[in-house]
Amino acid sequence: MSKRTVLLTGGTGFIGSHCAVAFLDAGYHVVLVDNLCNSHVNVVQNIKSSTQCPAQAQLDLVIAEVGVDKVLLDSIFLVHNVDAVIHMAAHKSVPESVKDPLKYYRNNLGSLVQMLEIMDDHGVRNIVFSSSATVYGNVQSNGVKETDALAPTNPYGWTKLWGEQMVRDTCASWGGAHGVSLRYMNPYGSHHSGRLPERPKGAANNLFPVLYEVMSGARSHVDVFGSDYPTRDGTGERDFVHVCDVAEAHVLAVNKMLDDVTCPVYDVFNVGSGSGRTVLEVIHYVESLNPGVRIPYKMVDKRAGDIASLVVDVSKAERVLGWTPKRRILVE
Ligand code: UD1
Image (cartoon, rainbow, N blue to C red; front, side):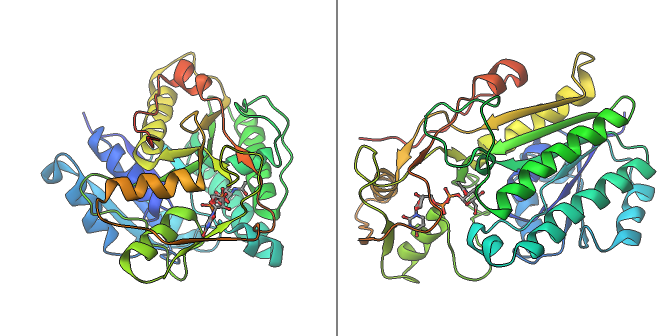
């Protein structure tokens, strides 16, 4: 029997590369599509050498921009028998989206429209959409469920919410379709091979890449944004979920689409750890993993647009997909 094929847009990025390893480990043929705007081409080799069975790994990269390179993208569907698309390609900086909303609407929504049209042209009816916890906006409670109110507070968040709706409406209009939106919390960590670190191009903004820059000496200290939030220690609290757990959720979602006749036309899942960790807890956790290393930090003003705490309920993904977040940030 020939292998099933998944197409991963944004496939050489941090989450994309980990998904690629997870799909290869699960026996899929993986086609990566990326314009390399925030990733490096040598990731492909590192994905291959991180899989359980490098000799059998079937992995292709097409350097293309979704939303732009239609002819190239069409050719992928002509050459490969794509079973499902995982659409991850997107811009993801909250502050940048506030400064330049049209860049976000054009890229994040335009690329999704084009990918859905191409899927339609080629009769591919299964899609996983990378959404984000940011669709919940400024939530006041922990244990946020998929059915809770959605109220993004920035253009990036709106592209994710509208993206979900576009997938939902399009799948409803197709016969025999399956769409899933995965709402990522804050992914961290990397594959145990050590070959797929989070390496954004340009200056890091997210907490973990900032910590890596401090540890490598590229940055003197971490600015901790806000120290009087209503949390255990006054610093922001997030639901940090290991990127390998995030990757496994994609494989389970696609397996369900392809194998489970009861799979609904559309569904949405939180992909978090289900527990919150504060910025200071994360700093101390990273120190504890690296004996002898101290991570200097300074308390500074809150970052515009940040919220105090966001922790989600992951019981739906556990129940429906059979997924469990296995890796944890331990707090002493
Ligand atoms: C945000 C978005 C999320 C998006 C992600 C990727 C929201 C609610 N979340 O996550 O949807 O996918 O960006 O860009 O909009 N921190 C510091 N110092 C730093 C960096 C971060 O103290 O140098 C703190 C932040 O204030 C926050 C926590 O660390 O409390 C996590 O921040 P970050 O890693 O940037 O992710 P989010 O802002 O939660």
